[in-house]
Length: 156
Image 1 (cartoon, rainbow, N blue to C red):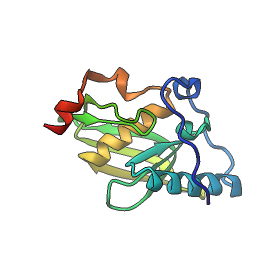
Image 2: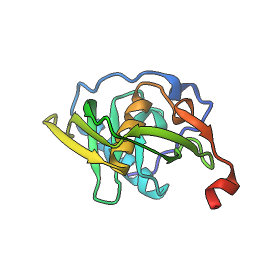
Image 3: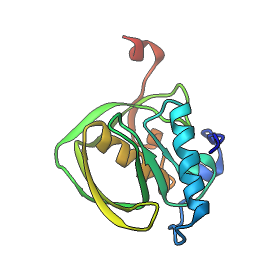
Image 4: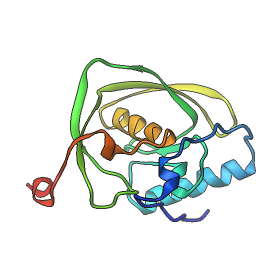
């Protein structure tokens, strides 16, 4: 496993749509392992493949309840109930914005072996699902923020 460089805001790869994963092989397993190590090293909640320069539909998330690997994920359902909270991104260090997201989200994805599964999340996990799946479409949280926050607002 290796820690990969996290692509920063302004890099073109962050604005591109990712291609589906078709081969569930050792190369994918290495990417997933590296993304996990990179996520934990950066003390993040989620990391999408384009954030390490790979235009594939791969995401890792850990909201504190254990690592989730999502390959070719898609959102199946969202709640009408929403949450508005400060959101940040490993590709935008030090920047935070107020973003409205569904409170509950159900996703369908494949695991590293190609098996399909469904997972439902609330609160932070739902937010992470939406944030990371946006990355796969080339969408950054800054475009969804109702306003960006100052350092004073974050600390207060």
